[in-house]
Length: 303
Ligand SMILES: Nc1ncnc2c1ncn2[C@@H]1O[C@H](COP(=O)(O)OP(=O)(O)O)[C@@H](O)[C@H]1O
Ligand SMILES: [Mg+2]
Image (cartoon, rainbow, N blue to C red):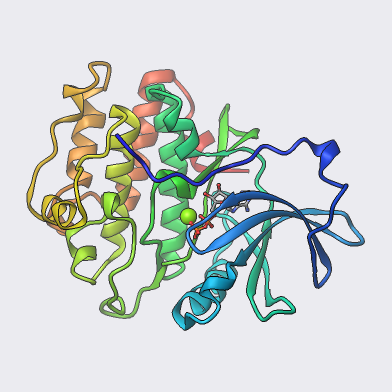
């Protein structure tokens, strides 16, 4: 299986003060952390308070693409509308001296879920603890009027230093293709990551249920180590719209029957046949409690 990966670099703290790349308003950019699709992500520091931040700076190549520039500023707007312990906070948005947009974000110390998943199978109880928090974050985002539209392993961050109910805190990141929910439907565009896109998202009409579908695909991937579907872009589109993936238990025998049922329901072709995101959150938490005796309330009420 070949997955597109962001390259994450581990930076020894002692080494990072030696060079300052660029000054952005009150922040100094210190060292690269990762590469995104259209932007670089850097470690930064506030000039006076020395607060550590992450800075996402658009690549010069995309400076002329108005839609990419707009999407970066829109990320800040999404973050302003919703504050939740499982959602990344974006503190500030501006342009640098060259006119390139940048975002100043809370710095997340940990690793993205894509890196974790690539090291090998993830324990079922850890999958449940992580995905309950993802569902919790997405419920907050939906309540604030947004569909994430790009739920995937690389857009989930695991903070090992902070725990929730004994498990690492999870943050959903990257509001780059988030859509505002209008009264009836979402403004149509086709955007997202093909391995996780629901049939209606391929048709340019994502709803909150498209995030449920993507979470189903993410759960499938964490449990089995495989995306549900493979192939070229047209093959992926056809498979997500019409094909049925092998049951997760085909790949992994220790999957609880309730989790397999939930994943398959979340990946239903018809959005109305999928559980709601609230049901996802509750069912995942209950499955975890059943497995480990962890208090459901500890997971749902993040401190
Ligand atoms: N606030 C942050 N703190 C630490 N690392 C981050 C932060 N935001 C993003 N990253 C890292 O940078 C990668 C790319 O960021 P992301 O916002 O997903 O960009 P893109 O929209 O290009 O995918 C992420 O997968 C993550 O590994
Ligand atoms: Mg991303």
